[in-house]
Every structure is written in structure tokens, then in C-alpha cells.
Amino acid sequence: MASLEAGIDIDALALAKPCIACRKRKVKCSKTRPCSNCARAKQLCNYDGDEPGPDTARQSIEGSADGEVRERLARLEKLMEMMMIRENGGESLSRLTHKPSLSPSLSQSSHQNTVPAVGASDAPPGQILFQDLHSAYFDSDFWAGLVTEIEDLRRLFDPPLEQPPPSWVSLSILGTAPLPSIGLSYGHPTLEESNLLCKLFFETVNPFVRVLHQAHFGRELDRYRRGRLGRPQEFEALLCAMNLLAINSLQPEIVQRAFGTSKNTLVSQYQYSCQCALTKVDFFKTDKIHALQALIHYLTFLFQENLYQDAKALLGVASRLAQTMGHHRDPSLFPFSPWVYEIRRRIWNHLCCLDAMALTFYGAESCLPATSDAQPPQNANEIDWHTSRFANPSSVPSGSGITDMTFTLVHRIIADTTRILARVKPLDFEKKETILRQTEADLHNGYLRDTADPSHKIIAAFAEVRIANLRLSNQHRQIQKATTQPLDPGRHQ
Image (cartoon, rainbow, N blue to C red; front, side, top):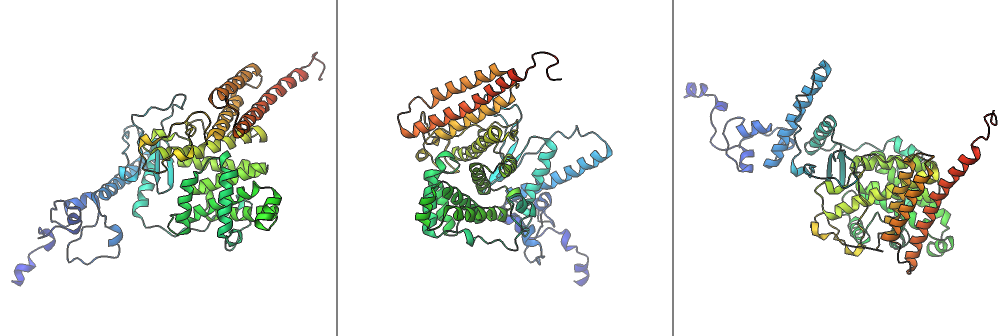
């Protein structure tokens, strides 16, 4: 018996029961070691009675979808290695024309069979990953898309590493000295004060910004306070930025009466808290929606206070972060719900408005990319929205004329006109005047016919002032050209 057993290779025999992975997946097992399914999926093959190794828990994959993704990752890594070897050897890569698509389980959007909106860029829309308040955009370039695809797949399997402390870059950009520890209790209002500040923000600030939806924010705030909101640090940064804008919108005597402190003291306190909160989430390289919203609101404060040097620098950072998340591409090119369309468009819309302000008042160049084709938000009232990532396509509210979004839409039209004028030849004054007249007509026909309501009068006055500012700039250059043109060749010698 002993000699018989010694001549048998246990591993070579077909085992009596399927492996653990095949039983979980409920698929037919070859009962070999490893079985054909585990070998194809590049995963650990274990049978009952095997002694688990230290990495078994991390290496095991539950479900056929995860096994397919792991197999795709292995293929892509091998393909990457081949491409790098051939690149170093000078060989052509023209034969490598097939780009594997991402698994639908990653919420990866496809841009096949989609038609960009009229007037949009001819560039392919690329790809967007949007899941659990993370957003990342990958352009259509093959090599770059392949690298980022592999990195994103690795995130699914590799255990999360300990987050490094915020980089000194974030601290220096905000002008905040490096701190041994960042605590935000200094800038935290009481619960009663927090409720008041949120109320003031949506009454005095949000109607002119409209990045946030009040009811949707209220639900997130409730989950945040009960400790059930994912990524609470990013939401905390957003709250700090909202507190800063709410206090800054009030008259000094109102602040003193409501909070028992001077406005200057509270503005300084909340500004410092906002800087610390942004630094804490390492805003300089974030891919979180709440962190980007916090940065945009902090930018709004900088523009309000005419802190143009910080505003211009951080506007470039915010624009690049938004592009990294894919907000510059219209979300209709991707399989998102109507509400996801809206929140992404609102973020890019306000960046467009800030960009035009930097161009008009600070003489900055536009930092928006030529591939941007994101449309303005929907002209609808806030109450009409179904604010869910899983809303039906038919849930898009219809609106016309004056709505809650009218001011920001008027601001966007003027912002787009500002960038169009910047691309016209400097001395083509007639073309610039034609563009301004067309903008005035579009605003009147779309939004400014009825100005009986006081809020409508404010919108009309805002549009009139901004158009007049652009026209004054055009006429000033025209006068300068006439007065500086020499009357005779030797006049300026």
C-alpha cells in the first residue's frame, strides 16, 4: 500500500470536489490544480482542506465580473510591456490598434454612436469614470488612455495605502504656513449658527452661483451630521467655503447683531478655516466632487474681494481639476442620469463665469480648453428636479423664461461672449459690435422681456452693466487707435 501511494501524484489527479472559487461562481470546474477557470482568470485556486496563505484573502476574487476585470488587467499590463519594449527599440506600434474597453461594472462610459451638440468640438469625447463622488476624465489618446485604464483597474484590487499628509504645494498655494496639525474647531460654528449660515447662503449667495441644489444639499448635510456621509472631509471643506461666503454677503451691523462678533473677525476666521479644510483634503490633486465645489466657492470669495493674484492662480488649478474630472465635456455624451448632467454642468458653468471675470477685470488669458463642449445648465426651477443619480431620463424638468437658473444662464451667455470677443482681431471693431448686438438680442428674446418683477430687474440691470462694460472696452480701443495714429511720418521720431 505504501509503494502504491508513493507512485501517485496527488496534484495530477482530478479532485473529487470543485475548487472554492468555482463553487462560489457556480461554474463547472475541471477539478485540476489549478483548474482551468482559475488559470484563465489568473487567480488563486484553492480546494477544501488547503491551508490558506497570508495573501489568500486579498488575491481571491468573488464573482465572475471581478475575474474578468482581473484577466483584462493582466492582458493590458502585458500589452503595456510590449509597447514600451517596442518603443525603446524604435519599432512601429501601428499594429496595436485595438483598445480594450472597460468593464461596465466600473461605470465606464462609452462614446460610441454619440453625436456632439451643434457647435461642439470635433474632438472625441474620451472616457469618464464617475462613481461614489469620484470623477476622472481620460482623453481619447490611445497611450494615455491605456496607462490610466490600468492604473484605475489596479485600484480595485490593491489594498488602499495610508494616505500621505497634505503636500506643501497645497499649503503654499493657499498662502498658509505649514502646520504641525490642522484642526478646524477654530472655525466651526455652533449647530444653531451653522443652520443660520446655510440658510443665509442659499438666500443671498446661491441664487447668483447655483452650483448647489438646496434640497439635495440638505439631505447630504443630514447624513454628514449623523456620520453617514462618505468622504466627510471634502464635505466639511464645502461647508467652510459656504460659511465664508454667507458671512461675507452680510452687512457688518447684521453680522455683529446675529453673531456677536465683527464681520472682519468672522471673515478672517472662516477664510482660515476654509484654507485649512482645503489643504486637509489636498485639493491640489483631488478627484472628489465636494472638494472641487469647495474650491470653486472659495474662488468666488477671492473674486468678490478682488484678490486677483490668488484668484487667477487658483482659477487655473480649478480649471485643470475640472478637466481632469471631465466636466469640460458635455455629460450627454456619456450614460449619466439627468441629475448627474445637471450637477456637472453647474460646476463647469460657474468656472466659465469666473474665467470671463478674470479675462475682463484682470486681463488674464482664458484657461478653458478648446475641447470644451459642456452645455449650460437646464433652465428650470430647483423644485422641479429629481435629484438622484438614478433618475429616469424623462425626469428632466422643462422651463422657459425666468426661472431659478436665469441669472446664472445670463451670466454664462455674457461669459461666452467675452471669450468670443477675445478671439476677434483687436482692430476689428465692427465685428465686435455686431457680436455685442447679437448677444443683447439673444438675452432680450430669451430672458429679459418681462422685467416687472424686482428680481427680474436685477438680472436685466446686471446684463446691461456687463454688456456696457464690454462695449466701453471696445470703444476705448477704437479711440486709442484713432488718437495714437501719427499724422505725419516724423511725428513720433
